[in-house]
Image (cartoon, rainbow, N blue to C red; front, side, top):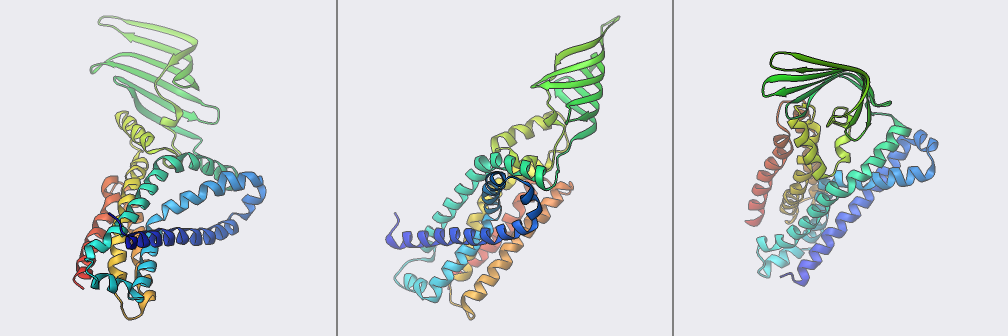
Amino acid sequence: MFKILDWYIIRKFLGTYVFAIILILAITVMFDINEKIDAFLKAPLHATVFDYFMNFLPYFANQFSPLFTFIAVIFFTSKLADNSEIIAMLSAGMSYRRLMLPYMFSAAVIAVSSFLLSAYVIPPANEKRIEFTNTYVRDKRVSATSNVQLQVAPGQVAYIGDFNVRNNRGSRFSLDSFDGKKLSSRLTALTLEWKGGYTWRVKNYVIRDFGEDREIIRSGQSLDTVIPIEPSDFIISKNDQETLTTPQLSTYIDKQRARGVANVKQFEIEYHKRYSMCAAAFILTIIGVSLSSRKIKGGMGVNIGIGLVLSFGYIMFMTITQSFAVGGLTSPVVAMWIPNIVYFFIAAYLYRRASRG
């Protein structure tokens, strides 16, 4: 299927992509060290190297993979065009569509690698990176919440007045159980404590069972009971969504929706973003090849300039639509895919123009 020329393009494309990543990561690390030097001096060296940088580098590289893809395509293809290699390929009878094949294969390699990293590899690494940041740079963990109400199971609604995750204790707790639309029982407690898993200890509690014609009241000082919630279900810190694998994200979103929890937009955004970033590899590759495969006045410099504007434009577009989704102005799925849709039409126009010569 692939000829020697195809493998040459694939090797050059992916090689330039990796080189761009290494170059920009080196610059980023220097800026990051300068910005966080006080934190790095406080932290043990092995924690700085292995808990932070070894986990930060793949995270950053994957976050800006579309930018690296675009730069690699434009840089490498511009060199081919300047050396008249693309003209020679097309003059030898190769169609423009056939020329795109090794580029699309390379984009597929990048897209699959990016998805596997974002879906399974980077989330566990993010846990260590974020823990390091919270410990030595700035603590962004949410330690307490109040006025929590959520459905913990079908027909069961819990309310927690206050809860502190540092000691896993809360106050003003109630658990209402319904039979259809009718309230069948209510558990209230002055305080509660999470014991791990779904096990909770309620103190100074009262249980009221509502029958057809009478009410049974039970009370006590302490009771261990099973309530199908955990603190992580209602206490959400910034970037928590980045620590979940894609299957975990999907399960978490479905579970929280069923419970009536409203603050899952960041998790939905992260879920759809992981897929949309993969599609971006193909779209930006088409744009990059279409822009740089023909000789133009100004050569590679002009192509790289246009490419940087378009790639940063894409990242800014994604950031803006993401903020719209967080603010409730649009759905997460629309926010994460609209930049790809817009850039797809740009890619289609540029490809059509380039293929016609």
